[in-house]
Length: 357
Image (cartoon, rainbow, N blue to C red; front, side, top):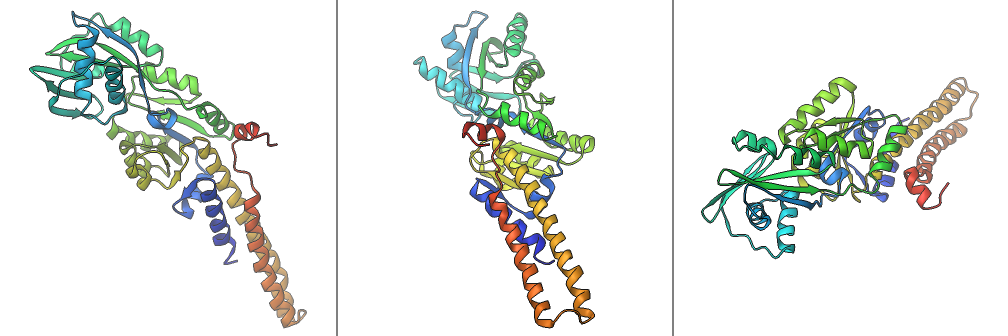
């Protein structure tokens, strides 16, 4: 009886490690099988986290070169993936922005700084509204870009809107298939993103996500996870960034993408080394298979003890045979746990790719 649970958990954790699923505790394996909803961060989790510029729309007398020089100049001091996309686009056009000074990051909204004698503000439409920078005439462009699932980055120079730069991130190839399989397994899915609702819904619709939580600032992710826990019950959170760490900690099971930040990995209960969303499916299969073995182990342990102990008590079983039966019971529990290694954890879509049944 004492071996029933630890041997199965040990074998399960070892099997997970072989498949690139690092499990911090046995509690995470136990909880994973009972999860009701899985929430995903968008950038770097559902998408590749390597956005690229798709549209450069200058306005109010500014040229595309001036727009990109201002935006890329300020974003060169930022670590955000969207900023990196702007810097790359400027470099591709041989635009050399000036050195940024007085740089400041406005969490969840954008960035600001000075380039030469110009004050440059780069960020969301919400940021422009907060700074009372009029974006009239840009609404139709914003609506079109958002409906196409693109993120609109607005740039203001000296208090005037200089234009809109549209950025799109590539959705991971396996995202649609992994989400579809999770839903077939009975899980609800949600996406948490700072994107505006229109863009977020367009992306979620393509992937097949059930619930969209859009316009969420980094500090709001924890509140959204808490709300999902109240509404659905046990909640898993999948993320990769520094901003995801508190939400990963709040979730009943936090799952970090191994290609993400060290802080996110440290906060998570499970780490997917390969950064593949199919690892979420595999982790659930591992959890279910492990606890199936634990139940089997308890059955056989109780079966042996239920027969052997009364038989030994009433003298119907020779002591040597009783000792052998006890050893056989322990051996059977260990052997049954080792059979976990034969369980296939691969998602169905990957099995099809490999020609497996």
